[in-house]
Amino acid sequence: PKYLRAMRLMSGFLGAHPNFQVHQHPQAFQIKIRSHWSWFHLREQQLLLFFQDPTHLVTKWRNRLLSATAELCLGNQSISINHLHDIIENDNYSKLDHGLTKSDINPK
Image 1 (cartoon, one colour):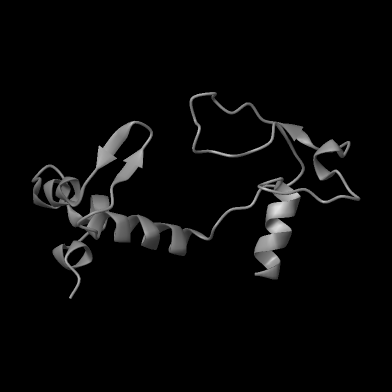
Image 2: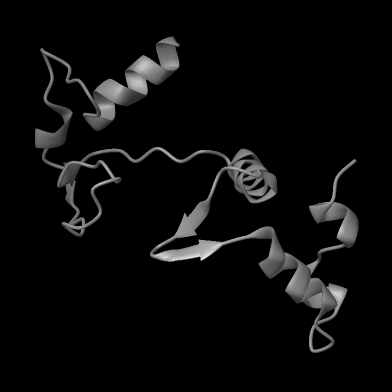
């Protein structure tokens, strides 16, 4: 929890550090976020960016794909587990291309 709080304060997400305006630092860079991305929070000036490690990020994507109720959207496109089935079954791709097996998308 303390690392999450520090990350929130440094990024300006639902809070700010009262004694240090990190986004006003001389080395802060400018970012323009599209106005229709209401789900994405980021100040226009940032000194630091935080990324979740790829393993956990992909695990979250996989869990959303496998969920019967959750939906996974990339941009304005919806993705389902059926898309992965189609890739695996498509003769134009080999396992060397996508690295997927049926057990990857049908865990026991």
